[in-house]
Each structure stands twice: as structure tokens, then as C-alpha cells.
Image (cartoon, rainbow, N blue to C red; front, side):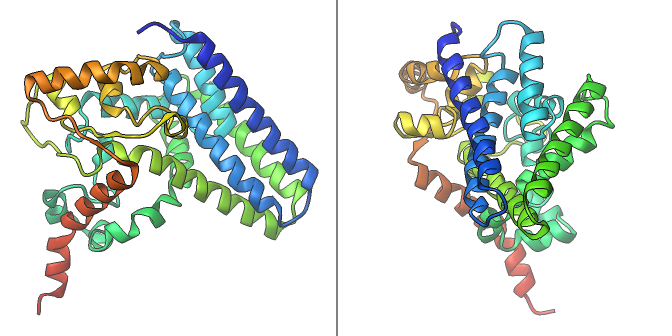
Length: 318
């Protein structure tokens, strides 16, 4: 549980250098279609900043709440245009009740449906998408970046964001600098293409980071009650991989350990895994670990199964 200041110092410097280097390349290349390659690069950097903000929100980096909030707002609001306060509130509720349909905002039936009960109650667009949601999952992730920005702005009108004035100012500064840079350096057509590609890849990267962790795992409803250990372990999935995968997924591939010890620094999760796995085996608690491809396959099969009644109903005569 000890802090890892050296790790986070190096990680912050590397991500900050990539952020600065990406925008330096943008200014150097100028009005060119080669900027689309820069858009992809910066999308990956934005996602890495988002993962760093995630660790800050869990107070894995600093002991002080104030230091975590300041760094989190600079990384989230100013650098990538995502409200730190909104995301922290949403993510805290997810950690408290992962995959609980009544309490976890990550499995609310907005566009995608996560259980057959949700499918039976679905209406309108969710019902239409639900029929083919397994095929639409990755295409829909291209909109996730835009959704994060929109949700951040909408959250400023609600009391869940405590420092609304500061967060609004930082979000506005991000929007002005980001859009201003695009339309100052690039022609309007190239600027729009850069924005769409950048936000689409950003959304896909973040979605692919979080999707393997809980999607396709059991969901809870109503009065379903489990003790803390089972609530966190049985609804989570780990993803096998080496240190490269740790870096790409920000350590979230150790989702079980992260949910059990959310303030544990990311590089320590690998060390905790053998202890947690052995303890779950001792208690007879299922501990699921899959390869990266298989984890996506499990999630997509679950989405396809949830939509089966809707497809059957749509194909029924009358």
C-alpha cells in the first residue's frame, strides 16, 4: 500500500513529454493531412492522461486530497477536457457497487443493455441498438470521447461537482485552446477531420481500457447482496499480459486487485495479485483471468446474448 513517488514522477514526465511533443509536432507540421497521424498519437496521449487522472482520483499518487484534486483537475479538466469532479463521483459509485444495475452508473441502460431484464424494459433508441449491440459496440466507442466532454459540461449544473467555478474555467480554457489551435493552424476541413479522428480514437482507447474489466461479468439487481470480497471479485475480470499491457491499460488489467484495494498504487497491483488469487482459491471464490482478446470476446458474447430476446421479438410475425 506504500506510495510509489518514483514511478509516478517518471510516468508523469513521460506522459507530459509526449503531450508537449505531440502538440509541438502539430505546430511544426502545419496545415497538412499528415496531421491525422498526430491526431492518433495525441488520442493515445490523452487516454494515458486520463489513466493518470484515474490514479490521482484514487489517491494513489498523493496522500493529500487537495494535492490529488489540483493535479486531477489539471490533468482532467485542462489537459483533456474531462471534469475531474464529475468523473470521480461517477467512478466512486461504480466502485461501491460494481455491476449493480440499480447503483452502478457504468451499467445504466443508456444506449447499451447489460441484462435481459434491461432489454425487456428498454424503449426507443436503446431497444433499437440492443438488437445488434455486440456488432455496434466498437463503433459506438468512437463517440465516447464526445460523451465524456458533454457529460462533463452537463455535470457542472449539478451539485456533484464541488468546485464548479474552477472546473468550468479549466474546461473552458481547454476548449478555447484546443479548438483555437485546430482552426488557427489547419484549414477548416482539416481541423474538423483532426477533431473527429482524435476524439474517436480517444474514445475507442478509453473504452477498450475499461471494457474488459466488468463487461460480461455477472450483474446484480434489487436486493442482491454479497459481502465486500465477493461483490468486488465476482463482478470483475483480470486480463493477462506483461508489463507492456500494464502500461497500455494503466494497470487496470489487475481489476480485481484494484477493486479490493483502490488506493493501492498501480505498479503494486502486480505484486498483490498472487496473494489475492491464492486467498480466493482458499475460500472457493471464483477468480477470473483472461487473455486480452478473450476478454473482449466474453464481453461481446454477453452483449449479443442480452439482445437475443429483442431480435426474436423483432423477427416475430405481427
